[in-house]
Image 1: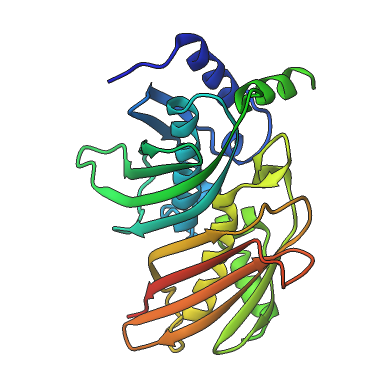
Image 2 (image 1 turned 180 degrees about the horizontal axis):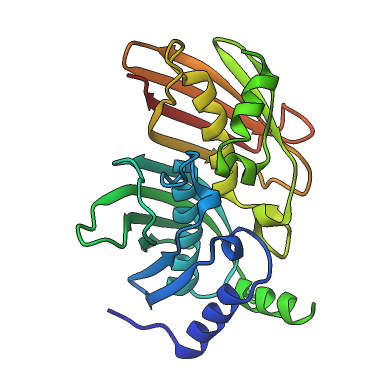
Amino acid sequence: MTLPDPKKLDQIARMWNHRGHGLITEMNLKIEKVATDGVLVRMPFNPSFCADEDESLLHGGVLTALLDSVFGLANLVAIDRISSMATLDLRVDYLRPARSRADVMVRAECYRQTRHIAFNSGTVWFDEPNRAEVARGTASFALMRGERSLLDAMTRSRTSK
Amino acid sequence: MTPETITLQFRKIPFFRFLDLKVTEFDDTHAIATMPFADRLIGNPIMEHYHGGIIASLMEAVAAITAKSGRDGQPPKPINLTIDYLRPAVKGPLIVRATVTRKGKRMASVRTVSWQDDDSRPVAEGLHHFLVV
């Protein structure tokens, strides 16, 4: 396991925890572990993400959005000097109904990077004793490399507000 | 069912209230819905683009309407989805059209496309499978 540069890690954590608006803020994501070979993120239960009136079944789309977000984080951690990044395609298998009010856990990795493309895979489960896998996803991202890093831009746009 | 009654039913679903989607067209083979832009749907805070996962969520929601098994009205169970992202979705409403490719006794296959101002410039295309038993 390779740990990324602590300064970069701190920057990523600050950006994620204080970005102010957008879906990732709404999801209240907590970074639990980060390494260049994978990240672990927790999403607390949120009734507004449910697909039923009882508010105990998460909508599949939430898990898809969660995987997409955490793939992005895995890429930021694993790849240096990304100036911008865009999801090319995303594929998700729903392995069982997401029926629980427990926190959702996601582990995601960038398992291959080239100059232009990042390949990701990830898995989703509830923070419950059986850890049954609820969804699994893969994605590829188009990478734009450059001197002006995405991280710097995001951190700056936050502090300038 | 009319688009209005579906939209009203959708208001009972917490996540569809979060997306704030409105169904504008609906029949046996297709459905169209629109979603207004909101801060909570942003993925890229600098450019203010929609989050890719939210685009996928809207596409799945609209696909599910068309896959719905008629009589008992049970929601179909999503099996998987594949989304092809073609361009960024910018500030402004997002529209999704879902078209049933095949609906059998057990499975439904649905294609989706989303766009903003111009339906010849799609933001994303999707392929969705549902279990409808």
